[in-house]
Image (cartoon, rainbow, N blue to C red; front, side, top):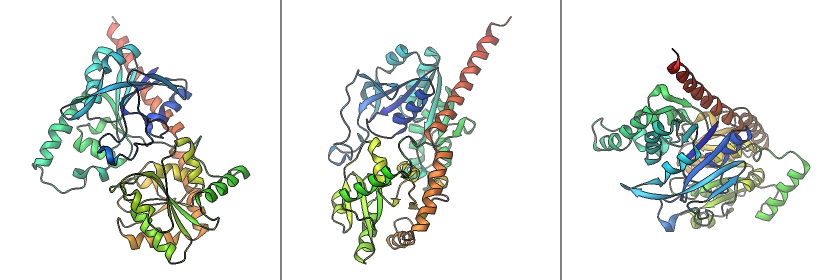
Length: 408
């Protein structure tokens, strides 16, 4: 079986699906290729506010590299009707001759072109949906059925997504709310949607247990300026208004100034960086490669994502951290038994929740539950196994149809 994953971008050193799922597919002996454009992951943002501008390295169109047992092919890009498409996708797919093509979304130029090419190259097409309701306003907004906003969505998303779905075997939605978005707004038939979560690279993310790992935790805390007695709250990702990590910084500052040993560690970059760095008890740190990120989680005590969901919360949970998120988060399976909720954008409530986690026994209990849950339900190894089964079923049906077609 030969698999191609189509992605809008590929950022070396990150822990996204297009970086890690191929690693585990290749580990199962599957020939795997990632085909991406040369765009940076934050290309939609204005150049001055791009959070990854210092971390993301420019990729060369036409290049092919090997990473963790799979091949990465970089294509150029073109702007068509205000949106980006891959330049030369047909030629690239023709040269690879995949059995399976997997896209990250059911809408946009990439899946549309993959759907148009499918009858000619005769692969099986799969899509995905990672659009949470929290980042797709129409999913939570009360609007009239025939509003201009709804009409625009139907023309630009629902109809094209429905056309893509005609050629699609299955759409893997990462949560139930992503499934709802795919069906209601992206034109995917409910019968073709399967909920399959994103995973965690458990080769990298796991709790500190050995003497060496505990010593590494202590050393990194010292290097960052944290005492062993400090309660370090970590946030990783973009320092943007929609993620709003500054709210955590304000909570940490309030607790710190009141004499409690809370500290904040913010790993990333973005518009709120300066405001966060000015808060008492808070330290910012540039993005780090995914291979180093687990060390920072193991050096912390609590993981906090104040606004939008992030897959980083699963990585932190895998390292044994209790997680704090807002009460509107639409994927409760990520937090049940291993974290706490606070009221969205309520500073006083966030402070109160963090104070509850002053208890080291509660932190250990929640953290241990989370680490076990990740291994059981959210490891990339189990996700890759599930994807492979789905791909094999589609290919077996293809072979069966060929046999029936030639039968006398």
